[in-house]
Image (tube, rainbow, N blue to C red; front, side, top):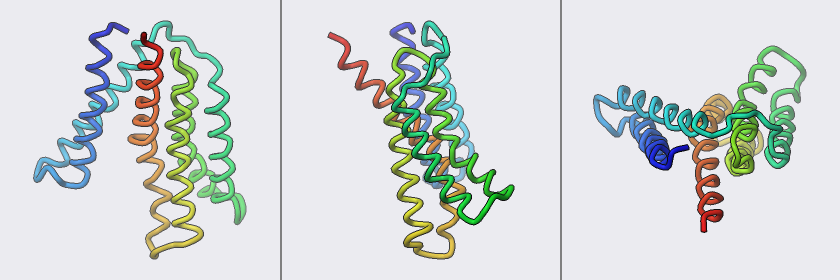
Length: 177
């Protein structure tokens, strides 16, 4: 990747995530919806630029650590979704809950720094574990179950990309003399 493109892509990711979060919570006034959409586009553009600009763009076997995190997440989500039997809703919720880990596996199979998604996946697993505790062990209210719908969205959009990019930048900085 050209050296001048990388900082622009990382800045687009950071600014996009900030705009998205601020717009989502209405901190930007009447234009919050529009700026949230702009933030989402910046996040996708920044992440896409970082992935596409990797040379060579060859699919490899994902890192074993990412596979281990995804396997633990599959056990957690299978326990949550299939404890009362197999149903269409259970399969849908299991698939939705596993999307952040599929994202980690995809990122790990691209590029040279295949270990960085371990951090993003581990952070997503930590959030999922906290949600499991909140929903199934110590629910605080009748709406606690809604976390199962919204947390995979946050994991896909914020947690996994932020953790992966941060780990990638740390590894890259350590490798530079």
